[in-house]
Structures are given as structure tokens and as C-alpha cells.
Image (spheres, rainbow, N blue to C red):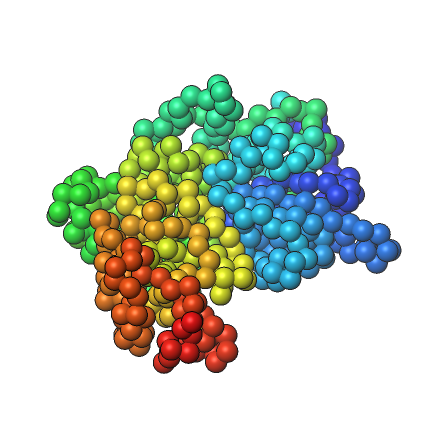
Length: 501
């Protein structure tokens, strides 16, 4: 069927976008991210800069994106403002150098803050789709993110119609946008497989200024092979959850799982998948990685609700080849719904996320290296952690060949406080912080999670704290391990007396 919209090249589409405008791009990770238009926009920015004219745009997405979006625009020095999350090395350097303004925010809040007008006008929505109707019906591709909200609120819309993603994806999505207060009612989802919305987005056809045809695979990167450390972390998580079932704190039917992104998360899911103590489970999460596909195939994962299919080319081809089977076991939702605190609390989700560092109070830093240098962003971890039935954070106990301890007296930046974090897990063991006072938390974290190379010095720190004061924390020594690393490149063998008042 011929479409009643102008057919544009990516370059023609990019020419319409002007300096200073804000663009809502599709994409939650590289999955479903716009690719051709942002790449052409980066080329335009280079030409404008060479001619001595300014050219930068505000970039809003669902989460991180691929090299053709964040990568190309950052390398062209074309981003003025970025939210809510990123993972590109060039863009990260620009943010940490103060060259790009970055607003790090909970992913569940992006859509409503855009609707409320807190993030400014959305001049353009540039969204990847696998199908488009003459009446403005848009079938998204491999993620939803905030695409539905950007499409509705943007002044003008450009659709990247990507032939790499077949039209058979229709039916995989569940698009729902809650009303704003005071007219908001409950979100009618009571199980991960419940549907509450539409399989398509519907856009005012008058706003669609053009369609760009593409045939581009998602730029999702792979993950490293598991290591003995990540395997042990995964086993520790599985053992802990199995013990929770035996204790009657988790029902025998189990509870839905949320899992973060990365090698540790993959190892955790792999361990849960092979555990004979864990029953077949459901997932209510924000990102689905390769590790979940075999779990669905063999019946270990009965259903997975997500916002993004962050899959390798091989895994995505497997899904497409048997798409009717996967439609029975997968669903893609907007991140406002996949990460919604109301639903996390209602469904009793067990959240499993990764940390950069964890302190003796049970506080978690998941975003900033040495408290100052942004890595990627908080993402959706806070959405789940604050509202989970059980919230778990895991990471290796050391980094940089043992020169950095992930367990420190005071976290150099705090994303998740002791009030939300319930369980810490490293390859060394499990620290269950529930019902523990500050002194008890500190002791169990050292004993169960810290690497042996750091236990004695952390115990010495704790011994220097006044036991008659509620919180065992020193303003002068709290960051001593970080300071020692900055001066010597190693957190070990610290002399606490060098840092006392």
C-alpha cells in the first residue's frame, strides 16, 4: 500500500532539523533506536561547524542507544543536552568534561516529565518502526522506550521504516499511557502477561513530515564470557532465593524477576535457569538479553514483559524465525509501564541489579566512578529497588586486579540508600541487611561480601567507630580508601591514622 507521506532520504530528513531543537528518539539500549536520521544529522552538524555556524540539539531517548545515534552525534559535537541515560564512551567523556549537559533520571519518570513540560518542548520525534499505516498507525520495532509519548507530543514526526524488522512483530507490543493527575487511575496489570493497551501507536498523520526507509540491524553489542567470579555471584543469588523459598518468605510459585544489564546480570539469570531449587518463573523487567531466550525455549522462563529486546543478531533472528511462539511468551511495553513503581510493588518483583560500589551502611553507588565521573546513569534500577519485594545488588568484590574494593566505608556517590537496599551479594557471599541496625549491617557486609584482602582494614575502620553512636561513620576517614587509590592506585594496606582528624 502506498503511503500518503513524503519519502525522504536520511539527509533530507536531517536538513529539516534546526540548531537548538529538541528531539525525542526511539531506542532503549541500541534496540529499536533510530539510526539513519541521527547519523545524517551528525554529518549535517559537521558541515555546519566547518562553515562556522553552531549546531547542537537536545537528545531525549528511552535509555542508551547505538553508535549511529549517541556515538555519531557525540563525535560530531552535536549534543547540547542529553537525558535520561547513555553508554557511549565519547559522550561520557563530553559529559564528564562539562561539554554536554546531562540529566540523570529514573527511567520510569521520563515520559511523565516530558508530558508535564519539565524537560521543554519536543520539536521532533524520530522513531524506528517496522510498519506504518496511512492513518498514522505505527508498529514499533524492538523496543518501546518513550517512543509512544514522543510521537504524541512532538510537533513533527519522522518515521524510520526499517525492513530489517519484519511486520510480523505486530502484536508483540502493549502500548499504554496513563492519564495525568488528577485524572489518573490504576494501571490494569495484575500479572506480567496482562495486556492493558494497544499493539500500535497512533499518530496524527498531519504531523508525519516524512518516512525514511532503512534496512539496518540493531547495534547491540555482545557481552563478555562468564568468569568464575560472575558464575559464583550468580550461584550465590540462586542459593539465596532458594533459601528464601524454604523459609517461606518467597512463595513456592515464586515471584516475577527484574534483572539489570551486563555480564553479572547474565550470570545471575543463567544460574537461576539451571537451579533445580527455583521453579519456572516469570520476568517483569526493562531489558531482555540473550540469556533469557534459551530460558523461554526450555520453559524455565514462562513469560517475560520488557521494554526492549537487547539481543544479538543471532538471538534476534531466532526470535523472528519463530515469532508466533515468542508472542506467547514476550511483551514489549513503554518504560513508563515496564518500570512503573505501582506495578513493581503490586506484582511483588524481586529486583536484581548491579553496583559499582557498596558501603558499610548498605548504600549503593551505581553511576559514578570515585564519586565524580559519570559512567552511564541510574537507569531503571531505582524504579525497581525502591519498590521491590526483595531488592538485591551484586558485583565483584574487587576491581582493577584487586586494587579497588567494591566494599568501602562510605560510598563516593549514592544512588540507592540503605532504606531501599535489602541484600548485597558478591562472589564472597550474601549480606542480608533486612532488620539489621547500622553496626550489624557493617559487620555482615565485611564478613560476607568484602574480599579477604580488604576485610581486616575494613574491620579496623569499624573498630575505630564509636559503638555508642547510631551510625558507624567517620567524616574524616569515610573516603580514605578512595583518597589512597587516587594517590597510589591501590586501596589496600591503608593506615587509618593518616586520615584521622
